[in-house]
Length: 412
Image (cartoon, rainbow, N blue to C red):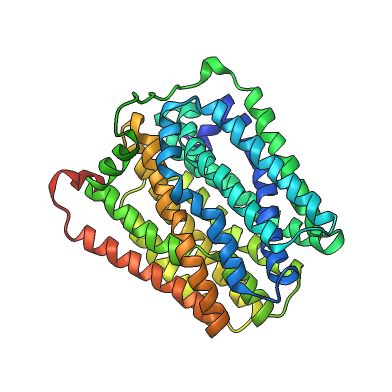
């Protein structure tokens, strides 16, 4: 058996995945720079520390995941995935550049950020299910779980580097340059895709065009006990727990009274946890349902510790715990749903997963933002903790009532 390090990075033995990962890492750094810059711009420059405005921007950015999910999943299952990715990546790059130019010129307004957030979210809604299912085309099913984990590692490496760089860029030259750098970073993905060895791809099975195709993915997932339980857990944590821009910005400014660099550092520290979780997942065999319980419960505990943190560095340490647990939960759901789903249905099922995990943000983010404004940031973190504990209870219920044809999918 190969050593643990080689096992953790086994998908990188495939040329196309190596090229893809290199381009994605550059783009992920830019993406996280933009996320931090957008939150900072809205919270400190376009409003007077209004957490509800940050929540509304998040709602607009993630609403398309829910609104467009039937069509984005249908597109991922029926259309050429490489061509779709070129379109979505180029679109997001242009949007980031335009927002950067407006901000650098000093002409950006809050309503414009709202519009760009929705447009960016619409492009990302199409991009996400295609990108996640496209991994199988790069590595095949044998290395799919490992590739998903390594993709998460890349995403969270960007999460560690991007916010820290964004804090420095904002402090030195201004918020708009973070948007502009992100726009340019999308070129890395486009270049990497042009270098693919097409003959070495593992083409996914394309679905047949049938009447009712939009709803077929919903019926398929909801008809299975394991997938239904996963979707309920994702809704709880995604809606009320994965609101980190609100948690970190309000705690950084209102509780610890730090600047953009301190805010960016918190996001980077949290990425230490998410990278650790991704690497742990990469070294494991395919995940089981019990790992969802562990991820949810530890997420609730981490948010509780963060809410009670007496100082900046205690809060940062709690963010590491939250990062590990959040990645454990989201990565396991990704792999479990892809590996247990028929290849021709994967796009629609993954679009549904994203719609549930991120589409709840338009509901949860404004609520969490209102709680932060009305009762304080620590109470907002309490809402996040409750979502983790609630999801853990769902897992306990399912694990203690395993019956019927889906029992194999729920095995611990």
